[in-house]
Image 1 (cartoon, helix red, strand yellow):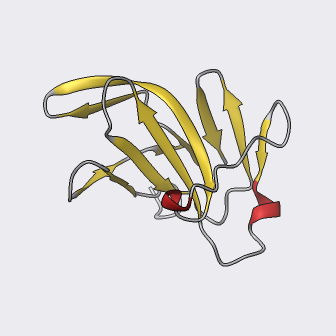
Image 2: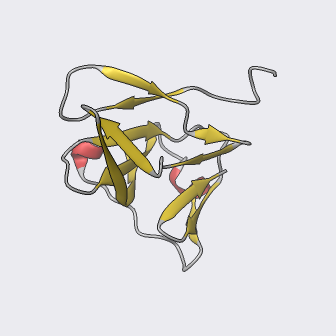
Image 3: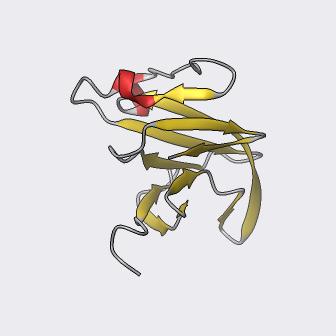
Length: 115
């Protein structure tokens, strides 16, 4: 398996001070994990957001159409794009930088798939 086949992305647990490695990219696509396990409990995915810049800046992007987000239009600045996954009954979130080579994030039911 080549280095470009899979990218390891770090999931930052917002309510803690450490990072946990998460393998959220499969077959060249990035998506929110369907469940988050934290302190021996599992939480189902509730929603997700795509941000232009750090999520703390609250620049939450709305989809370009009913299929998803065309990322090229947001790549003109030096700001990174983030995928933030929110889970039911917890303030803990999963946060991913969307790699530069990904051009589109598609709505996939209750989840999103960036490729």
